[in-house]
View 1 (cartoon, helix red, strand yellow):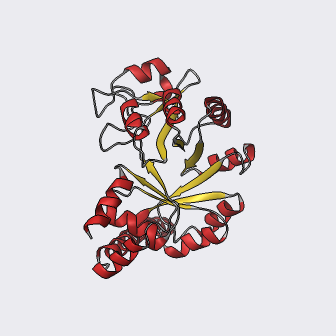
View 2 (tube, rainbow, N blue to C red):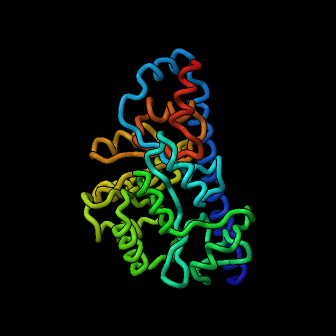
View 3 (cartoon, one colour):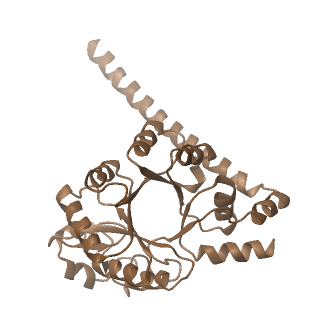
Length: 294
């Protein structure tokens, strides 16, 4: 009898956990659809009004993994395309550590053909082995990326993607960035990485940005970010105007990712009031073209 009750309890717990996960997914999707519908259902007169007031504040356009709609992401070619674009303020990349105390730019640890984890190889191997999804392109080194940003006067938007990155490795990243002379900011989904960087760099020496998927259900984390002078960047479908106002009231800034629709980008800027827009396209030009056709 006791064993049966124990087994029944375990089954109930599993069912409840599965239900909770599914409920969270459904709620998240529903919220995203509602936000998308909000932009999609804006009247022509409302869009014209937003366009008339655009831009009402300074906005930084960030090239997502370089100008990745024109060249394969996180490559020298993509970074150079972004560097040549007058409308691009910052160039974003994801960095990973190699086994010889260097860093490489790519989206995932297994982005290189035949390599499961870039931590297992040195920088030369990482940058001379073709990428898994594009055999004609190679990952850029972190040093190459920083030089491109510095030479073009673009802000390096450095995402700490590797959750296994140690504090010693983060110190090495910061040393490389400082030595490069490039303008920069660090971004990450991993709050602990940003906290460590903030402990090393005061707000006047480095701007940081916490990446989140949604802005409704992580209030405590947002409050802590504000206390540490850390900005917010949210998946644009899940950002609320209330969150933007909360960060602005505290003197912090808010960005959105990854916005490839000119209409949605304009609404994020002119209606929600965001300060940064990350996109795969030349978004400043896309918005100008969109407004001209309204």
